[in-house]
Image (cartoon, rainbow, N blue to C red; front, side, top):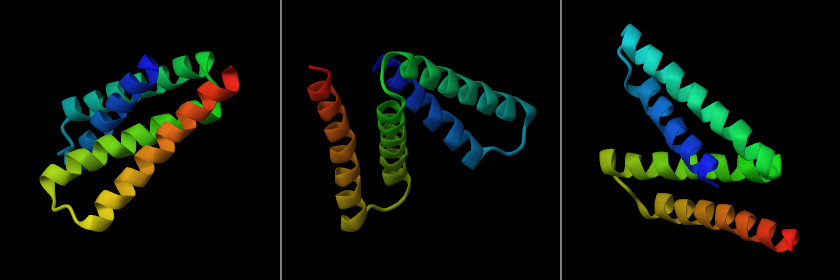
Length: 103
């Protein structure tokens, strides 16, 4: 699970890097490094868990992190909050179901 968490955080770094990049070579290099770390962590997590579960949790966490950061930059309304909660419940549900199947 640690690989997924590190990968999701690095996914947030490169996604925000793309959004705020001014085209500087060092910024682009940083985005590339974060993208590489993200992909590496995803591959490592897939070695220990089912790929479909890893990808669902990975994307869910990345989306939740990005949305949380976006809440501090832009305004938050009720519909966004409800959808974030639904997303997090789905990710946690997949994780709990995966643990139940493994037993």
